[in-house]
Image (cartoon, rainbow, N blue to C red):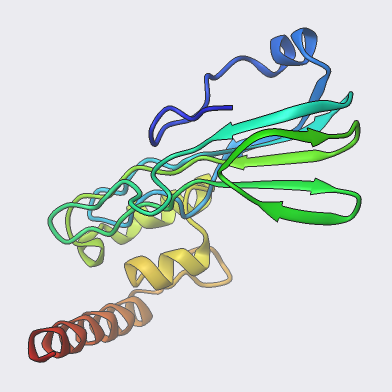
Length: 183
C-alpha cells in the first residue's frame, strides 16, 4: 500500500476490492479530528480496516508523518498517517515495511492523513463546528480543544461556555507565543 501524499489510497469500491483480493474490509469512513483545525477546517483523512483472508506479505510506504499537511494563517497542521497491524493478539504501528509476513486473520488498519486548515480555528463559526461534530468530522472533545466550541449533552452549542473557552484558549496561545519570543 502506498498513500497518495496526504490523501487516501486509491479509492476502489469495497465490493470490487473484496471481489478482486482475499481481504474483507471491516470498517471504512472518515477519520475524525484529522483535518487541521482552522477557520476553514482541513479535509479529513480516511480509515479502513482490512482483515486478511490468506497468508501474504505486506509492503507499506506512507509519507508525511513528521511533516503532515500544514495549516496556514493561524490554522493548525493536520494529523499524519497511522498504520496498525494486529497479529496474534499484538499490535504494531509502522509506516514503511518491505515483505513483512502476515497470516490469514491478521488485521491492518490504515488511517490516512488529513488536510491542513486555513485561518484561526477560534474564529470558525460555532454552528459550522457543530455541523462538523454531527457529521462525524470532529469529535465533541476536538470541538472544545481545537475550536473552543462547547457542545452540551443536548447537542447544541453552549454560547456562554464557548465564549469562556475561546477566551481561555486565546490567552493560553498568547502566553505561549510570549514565552517563545523570550526563549
